[in-house]
Image (cartoon, rainbow, N blue to C red):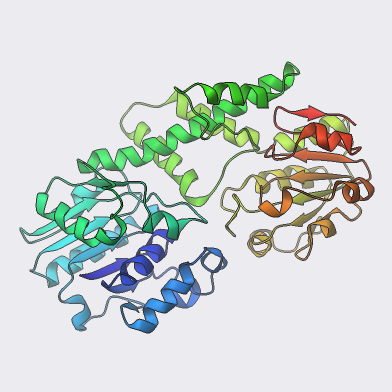
Length: 432
């Protein structure tokens, strides 16, 4: 098929790479806010496993062509079968402009695939801009995960297909047939239902995380190890173990804005959600939980202290820091005059771009232990695999106050305490 992909999101880059690698002829037009010349140098794209390699291979083979803008007279826009829209939520008007332009130039059948997180009902509005009876818009919500985008797209557990037109559904199935061999992963439903389902899924996941964080806070106050509670809850088949890990808050560009989009949908419908508002409040509150534990340990005497932080990215496997807990944490620490030394395998450049040079911030790109030099305590914020089994003997010697604050509960409290350090996690604690 002849496919046009528009957008500079992870979803657009992944779609362009995956579709062109299975034989489709793909023209990719990144959004003009982040053209290919900029996107090609983006840290998050370079860090996304396999993606850049497949993009380069498709360009070399000729199945993928990248344009800065919609060609005005090229045959590449004359016979498009699929227009794949994967744009940021604030780029909806640009999507409408492109749909209108293509509809005016093309009279042959066309399927517009809305892979963006726009307001519920947008896919139907796209179809109203089309001018041919064979031109249809379908919703195919973005279900990718940062750090696993290629794997999720090429080996999907499911596709949510919002489509009322049988011929359009056949066309989309053919488009993605190479990724649908093991079992049928399509779940077809009306367009509005698919758009809302995507938001509802992330709302439920966020609710589980926030509920577990509330339980962790209660466990702290009752001197209960929350890990016992988590194991007991997960063993109940009605609940399961997924997304039951307490932590110091979630972030990320897609997850966070999907929740805000769901809140906007609720508000626009006149049905404000006290539950969703509470979930968002809990998450923002949890981003400061390590700071509060540090404050309690030192009885508020923080000025002049030095803290090491391991992990800056909002999750392992990415260089992005969008809405990451570390941003809130740093602001709280700096407000108390705390010097912070940070290590992260991928995201330090993003942090430096966000804050610039700060007199209380030292970046340590080479070695996690470099961040611990002269530090009073260590905070674990992002659970990169390189942090899971540190040299505890070395940390005990390096940390002046021998305090470890574990924001992801990846360490064994009693093992850490047996090595002579004070451990404080989320709903977990142990003393030397």
